[in-house]
Length: 387
Image 1 (tube, one colour):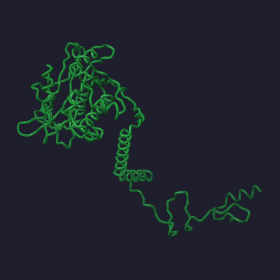
Image 2 (cartoon, one colour; image 1 turned 180 degrees about the vertical axis):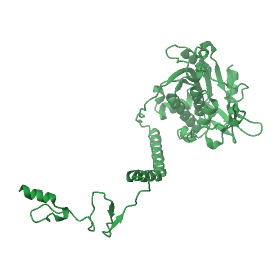
Image 3 (cartoon, rainbow, N blue to C red; image 1 turned 90 degrees about the horizontal axis):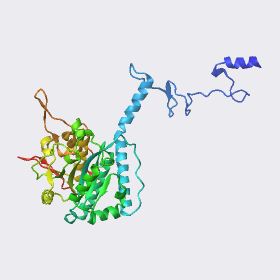
Image 4 (cartoon, rainbow, N blue to C red; image 1 turned 45 degrees about the vertical axis):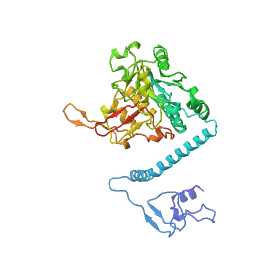
């Protein structure tokens, strides 16, 4: 018996007994038409003809495994556009479903929690003045609500977070937040909503910033890289209303200061109203240094959340030019003005980061523009923060 087994082991596959004679079945002929082997050999079989065909050999100097990887990468790149289109369609459907749920008054599921990087609260307050309810249409109220929501979202994700406050929070705007948006603002962390106007809210903001436990610490660009700024006194803080009508230009944000943004979506129908409003209440005004850093080939109006985001970027990097380029859409033609280098040459500095689509920044709901910033170009004109 043992001799018989050894003899079978020494036999070639084609010499083994065929099935039906009491022995193991013979190995199938891989050249038979219709046969599909699970093993991948040096030659592939054509299922239609039963003939063998040669594989495409890899290029010289490339192994077969490396060639397979190369081909897979080619296929992946070829499908990139299709995958991107599918992602955009999926996002569009999610946004439409969310809007429909909000309109129907349904309770929305909580947003997924993303891992947070290191962040710090700094003693600076950004106030959104919403005392313009009677000057806006229903669609403009809707847009302003979307922009305030975006301000909160950007602030919560920022490396250096500012205190966010909303003043004159009443009328149709409050009604929308309470009803259509389900009162979610009530649980927003680091944001306060007040019925009082911007002057009273600025005073409350100062009291909160000087609190050693909840006011925050002087870090990032606020510190200016020196101990004097880091040890700044609360008495050095100021209250500033952003307006292009002002003769003053902001050079840097200061610790323990409050910066007020006009929460007015009006397609610039009421130009200068924020400046007038601030002067009547004895509040200092200033404009962002857009004209000193940007060259625009068309007029452009920044929304409230754009102004807010620009200042958040400055808090992190201390560079106005970089902050403007990260926020202002490139399709509007905005470029940085030339900067003088040590060798006397001027070079245009362009941001490498692609800006998000403007409509995505406004949550798909921005149908108007805020009164916060207008960028105008042409003979004798420069980009300014508009009031």
